[in-house]
Length: 500
Image (cartoon, rainbow, N blue to C red):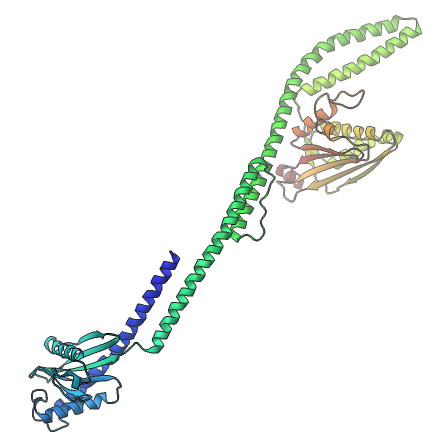
């Protein structure tokens, strides 16, 4: 289709160029005819010569014919290739023809420079100009030649007496214009060929890119982590591939986020169900424990045997341990009720570390703390957050109890705006670390790796931190220590209150 369009454009250019040349030559020929009319008017009307009668009315005489030839010669002798003269309506004939013919008999055209067809066309044009009182023009084609004919009427002031006519014979169009035409045609043809070739190349490149995109989409159906590799593809293909890669990454992140939300919901459902069960069991166990403790205390007071008294003391210790466990179970089952107040987390962490100083020294554990002193406060329940930090510090010390180590604590404020500010407390120990399987279950209730643990410590910490709108994360690996990160958000209300 593109090639056909170029060919049509080339043909139109050829036609336009030919028409333009003919119009240009016709315009010059009309100017020459006007010159003949002006020359006749000058001679006849202004009386520059001694004519007592209209030349065209007396054109049958040899004197009039010679005068008309002189008029034609005066205008046409310096214009190459143009024949012309006058038309007499009185005799209905061409007169005063220049260059002067050897014969003027229209029946004997071989004696004339003009062919019979051209002379007849000139006579008809001149007759039409006289009859219509306006210009008349013709284009006559004879084989390879073209004859341009132009005629204008002559007026003596009282009536129209005839006309002036000119003929220009063109054996071919001017060479320069024809060369330009051919050059234009060649240029258009070359441009058309280049367009077709370029179209084929672009189509080939696009087909390769489309196939690559189709393959990438098929891979995304099975693996959202796959990407479409782009190197030297067209810019449009690269943009589409980049958009698909971004879409795959976004879908992957969305699915991962939804999976985490589902895990949290399942975890919350398990905790809720477990909390109801634990609450019932704890209430049922608490009353028998009170009875057992009372009876053991009575036996201890009335017993005289030292061994019996010692056994009673051990039993009371176990009863107290069970009672403490029941209290934990009841605390786990109850909804978290916070009594929040502005608190400096750095100062709170510093106090909790001080409470474990003796225990850390006993197990050869060194504390390295770094607190920000920007004075920023967070609204938290101090006792609940102290419970969280105590549990984390105790677990870190227990993990380094055998050979000692270092517990590094950093308290920092993150975020540049009031809406996104948060305080991060990070605990990093050099203990033996935790395997990935254990890390994935570390917040599950009753899951523990300690022989005497209940598995509720970190579960309760998790619930308390979430109740504050924060997050607690654990990162660890075997032999590389453990990092516990607690993040508590700061609301805009807190920042305004602190500034006030």
